[in-house]
Amino acid sequence: MSLDTFLHELHFDTDRARPPEWEVDWEDAPLPYKLYRGLPQIPLAADVPLSLDGRRAPAKPEPRTVGYVLWYSYGLTRAGQSAHLPVFPGSSSGPLLLYRRFVPSGGALYPSELYVYLRVEGLPAGVYHYDAAHHRLILLREGCFDSWLTRALGNRCDLSACFGAAFVSTVFWKNFFKYHNFSYRLQGLDAGALIGQLQVVAERFGYASGVCFQFPDRALNHLLGLPEQEESVYAVIPLSMEPAASWFHARMEADEAPASAELCRELPAIRPGSFLRSRKIRAYPDLIRMNEASRLESVPPSRPAGTPERSSLQGGRLALLPLETCVYDLASACRNRVSPDLDFMAGPVGLRQLSGLLSGTSFPAFANDLDGIGGEPRDRIGLYGCIHGVDGLPDGAYAYDRPAHALRQLSGGDHRLRLQQGMSLDNVNLYQVPLCFHVVGDRSHLRKALGYRGYRIQQMEAGMLMQRLLLAASALGLGGHPLLGYDAAHCDAIYGLDARGKTCLIQIPVGPYRAKSRLEAGLHG
Image 1: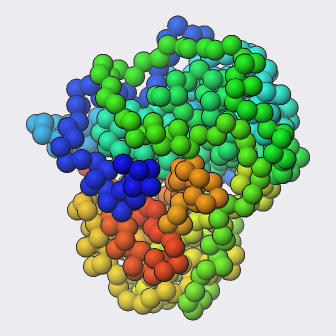
Image 2: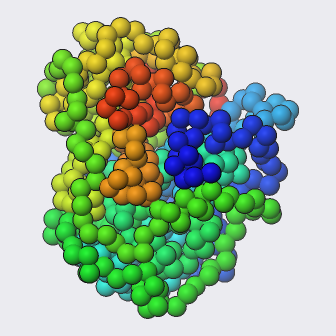
Image 3: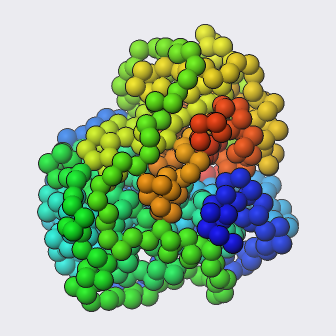
């Protein structure tokens, strides 16, 4: 199977991406978190602040505040038990115990792992794994790597002006065991949700961040001691007390970036022992092929990635209520975020709520290695939605024009029947949902600009936007449920996307909901 066919099936023929004969061995399922053995452990403070209701003045980074950022980004936050559900498909009914985080993940399997390079007072400088299961840091490699990382990122980020950097990786087996090849699509979205959450949390603590999608993969995997056939870094997020404009540089020449081999020779190899619980790991050759095809040996020169989404918007523009800064208690929004499943219920959503939701979803300008300072993924992805029953707004399919804070109507009418017909699973009743959003991007998955790496970058950017939408919905008392069980071509037709080379990357119903029947407790100090 060609890689182009593989990507086509991931998006437009998902039954082929997960064969019907694939049997999930739940008895040998991996843990949703990675555990290291025999390495130095540094416990982090458990007295996390229970309110984050505004941007704080940047405090000098220390182990305590770093722990807060990590816990709100990717810590285990809730233990829940749902009543009268089978523990596994085909098993007898019983309570289902799950440990949750503040970011969504397909099947609550959390294939992403979070690592950090830290140079803060009170900790040995070095590279750490965030052990979410125990809320602690595991020291993987001690030392100061400012210069090495600066060169590895193509001299675009001056790491000496940062107190650290986060690395978001993917462990392929953690959700391949259930979803087979379809896991490749989920892994990019999951990584993006974590990046989006980390950005929002860092901002609330007053820290500036950037996102680097392009780097020599083997070099960074070598730094962290990751076996690249099992796990690979997907993104790097530098963190600093200083504005990004003072340490992030957009442009570089082709001969400035060292190659992976050169960088790897400068550091001794490490192979720290880790544990995932599975005794038998089945082969995933297509994921390895995609990872190898997406790999970079060095950072390429800067170049535009995609065409501005806003330039292609058509239709009459309906101005929303005046754009206001969406300020909410992030801690409360995180705790209250739920995926309602069949618990959506019909209820009123006003134009003011919709305006606040969209303004809270919008990406602020942030440093990234595709656009430079002030870049915005909206130039490559957009937010569309089918809206029903919003007082003061005609039913229809719309595209959100963020610069104008307006909706452009693409077609009128109630599209709930068409959306429900496009569902491959009956796990959400879309007739009960007033807002059904779609994150939209290029059908080519940025191949021309970024090669096969463009697909996973596009999925990560979609995940980042998805996470902001979910948090904004939660802050307004609404539920949001990310879905991939939909017919992409069917939804594309609603918005007329095919003719413009666009497609729906993920579907997110948003609306009022009733509380689930479950026992749940927060895991915090």
